Image (tube, rainbow, N blue to C red; front, side):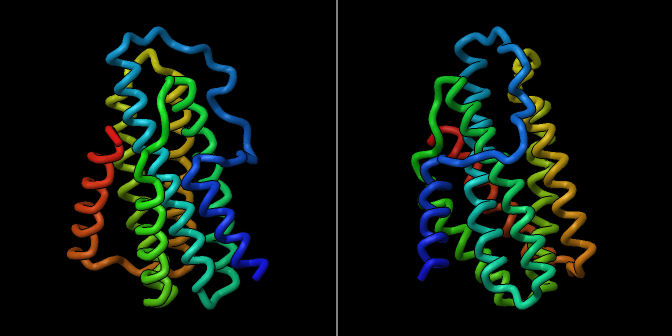
Length: 205
């Protein structure tokens, strides 16, 4: 019962954008850049997408940690989830600084991601780890595109995205080292399609 309550509490905090970072915010000491209204709106849209990604990451890693049969893999999922919570806190803070808000559909994103994570874990540890590798590969590419799209003077958002990108690469590498198998091409394509729907929607909602 205690574990169940803890998971519900974690889900509610993720959906509400309430998170505590264990590491310092990389943007904390960087001065705010001069952004016009359209640039601020664009940065906020991109950071809202990134915040949704971190909401999904909390759900995915929590589900995969719950259903794995390996303690070593469970600990890796827990550790990665903690680092993703840093991202959740940083992106939430940046959204506030930009005068914006998290996605209105966060409960939907979380529930869907948890179901996918549970399914991946039920398929076996090698498949679950493979899902992590492919997810992190796609997220890394997505963050790289944001670094190209963010206004050059928005250094606060850029430094957060850069640290997130480095962490996602590390998470994928760690999952690979634990015995991940490559996801079939149709699965990769399906993941890309779902990600496009999520990013296109979360940018505005």
